[in-house]
Image (cartoon, rainbow, N blue to C red; front, side, top):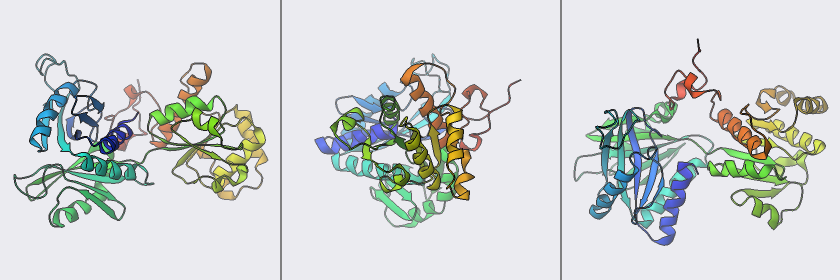
Length: 382
């Protein structure tokens, strides 16, 4: 499961069980790292962890550091310099080639639950949010290390003590620049306080039209990634579909042409049409186009998709001109046979399109992996 979702579940579980945890968060990176700014890991008091900070290089040491942070009830930042030679850095064989600052903050059950709520709310928004985290501050001052503020549109949610509104106002003045930077991460220095700014990108919202056997692996891959998944079917919703799609919302839609009456449709939504019934798929696609859905994937051969557009005579002009959001045949060309391979191809394409990526080889990308400014600019290969 993707880190945000896994961490949110772990934090919410801490509240449910009444357990304290330590939250580890990458707040700054110089050079390269496995997950970039915002990578998180929850450390339970029994030493078990949820989420990843690195590819396994730092987790064991961080779990040890988390014990003392919990005992002292005081947040602190731990720095790892993985730019050193492999044999020099703690004998761990690190190869990330970056200077990584990791914030360790002890959270009681109420604090864990509160932070889970503001993270989940940010993932459910239509637009990116900005999370500000105090990474350094003079001892005994306010705000203290570990205080958070989530800027979502006009609303601001905070955890910890921030004191007066001066620092909050200073951060708010930088929200647009920080959001445009993507996950690269800004550091704001103000009055001796160091604040790490992280962009929280909303989770992909995937709508699957059809609940046949081949929809099962599509839903499984999508929910494993932490996406919000909804499955619609023309048949009554009974236990069987819910059991086949345990982490997805299953809804009934008897009239495909009025799909928007059953589920929310917007430009932020991605949809996969795979009911295997031509007339129903045709109406699904028409409803999705009229609603301005941002990605529409159609299972089946190219000729079937072309026939659909020929048959959709009642589309508005704007819908007719939005064929660039339609992907039919659906999926990236990754090869393989069978439902799972097809599902992997579909999910890979949805992820690439919704994240504004080209879907090519990372070796050909002429930019850092977490640099949003070059998402669609793969390097030329001689």
